[in-house]
Image 1 (spheres, rainbow, N blue to C red):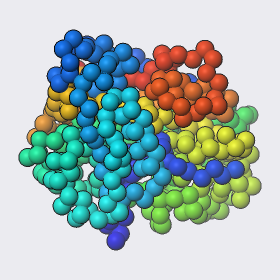
Image 2: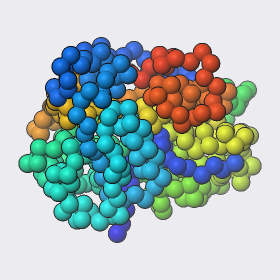
Image 3: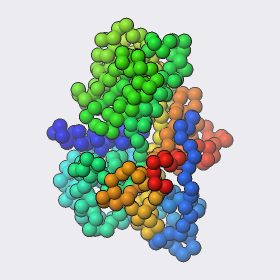
Image 4: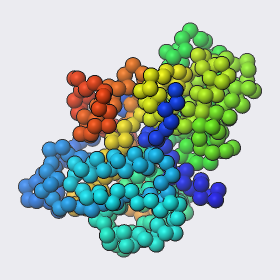
Length: 426
């Protein structure tokens, strides 16, 4: 059971906080630039129907209705979290714009991985393309089953890799993040912004807590990155006032985070000011509760890589020491995934050819040369969070935040693209 739980957690982790349906317990863009667009005719569409945007991304000027209507389903190993349901809604939204039949929606295997693998051949016959959130340890088997069928597929929350190899080669394209880089950014961010949120306190008075889950590499890499950043910024803090609240002691949730952070606070009563990196929303929520119970909420600054819970908190009128997040709207996250699947189904590109500029030269390519496309994320604070989320509705032609003011916001107010790292092949 423990092995199954850890595998499920790994499948969750790539999005974790971005789309989590968290409790409602009472921007500026960090990356910019963009890719050159790639106008192209479609492989399976009507003659003269031409993309004016980038293959594998949604093109608002393209006539999807002139093409075949493709049938797609979203397969989930275990629909154990609201984030899968939220993902289904986002895929359904893009499907409505791209002339995709998504009537099957989310197909849940309730933790029965054997049943999922057994049914994949038939599902590949029944659908033109499949969106996957399989157990992260099973993608080698998924790839083995899917290859003979010829049916396109793509993973979403967890990167599809073959973990039988130390290099964990990719099995399909991926859209996501470098987790170590995310952690490094948060270490620098918390240190540099400390006095914006807790004014007038010398940095020598602050302690730093990373709320981690060491049992999942994609989460733990964030902690490693944060520690490296603090080492570079303040060696004394790294050596004497940096702590890890590791929730591997229990579960990947707010209650365990609260207990672990409370233990750190109790063992360090001499530190009265805290910078806290909750590596996903639930961990930030638990840290916030621990600080409140210790009477340290006014002295602390909690942030996370995610923010759905923080948006819920602010929408309910509550402000506390959970003060900021780096957030990716779910529609922006899901766009390249379903956009790539559409390109495969329509003959516009293949899994090994899509986004060639996003092929990381460091990847093991024994199973193919696949893109590892990076996605943007945006700082949100109470005073400006509605602006970015209103933009995400305008960008995606959606209506997830209908009450947020939209005056003066256009599809180009923020960028949904990031610059390509220099280590990529280009």
